[in-house]
Image 1 (cartoon, rainbow, N blue to C red):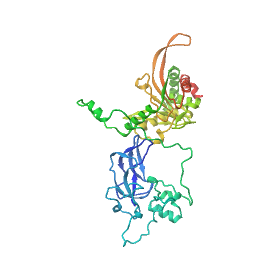
Image 2: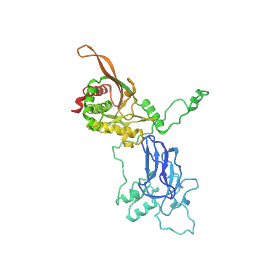
Image 3: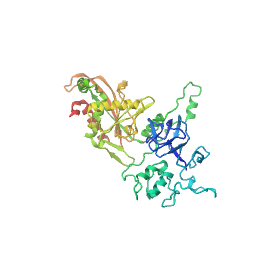
Image 4: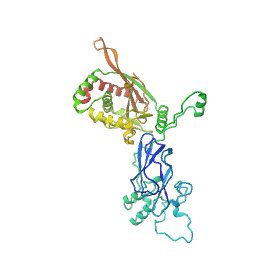
Length: 435
């Protein structure tokens, strides 16, 4: 019977998306891996591929549609021998859900209808429930002598498709998740507060412009509300003297100028944090619901402001990379973040984040932890301040204020202080970071 093509979840936080553009039209023949559409998620615009072969029988959601829920039907795929007439009159496929709808193979046929030799009848599992597989997959399985009950489907709602049976060996067992795999992250909490109608009444008669929330802004609101409601934040503050770092940076940039490399203070901050996580491994950890995961590599996320929101691309293994390599990767990630061209694996993960507002003249601030990270460093501007030297004399130095926001479930006060001290030592003695 006709198969639903469902709106995919292209990121862990995606609950709905915008079907930006169809790359196929009704009547087109597609194969597994062919591009079907461009979909805007809460983070980026991504291409959506077909997982099975067939003919696009009907497009249910026109391009440009916003707020399309994940797992809702967006098109119908017809298999060999099927036609658009097989599609129900309700503008969707006959099967609205796998459990509730009757299968075509089980529907009553007119007595005079000749028997077809297309696909074998729908198989049953050990409990008598129907196993959902495409007609082509059932035929291939019958030819190869495969038990569909022993094959894990990769299609919508676990449907077995051609690729599944072609790659399966006789007697293959269904794929199972690793024993230690982390459970799927729950959907972010809906932001609480005054209701829409209440707020509209408060400003009745005042001049205002209503701004529609896009997917990114909705996700930011939900995740930050969740973070502040569920993460027990505490804050550690330090001042860092930058004079040695600024001098060292100027010397390095002069030597690297012929290579077109220009290191920023933020590059040194990322490197300092990555090395600190290695020096204090117990703080290189994330909260995983009912356990703490202590990471081995230093994967540092960096907040990048974009129009309408922000991204936190992750620099993986930042402790092992040279400053020039780290700087080049950060520039590339930031540029693609602003164009919303990052892939999900480039902004997911990490145990620690850096948020730098110093370039905006902010002296200091408290950043909100991005779950499941254990901590985030808020970085202010470097400013000239009077300081007391080691000999007791008054001097002028460039001082940068930082605040470490810490998840108390993961990192206790003394451990957080140790981590911050290590970051300070690295930045005040920058040459040691190259050792």
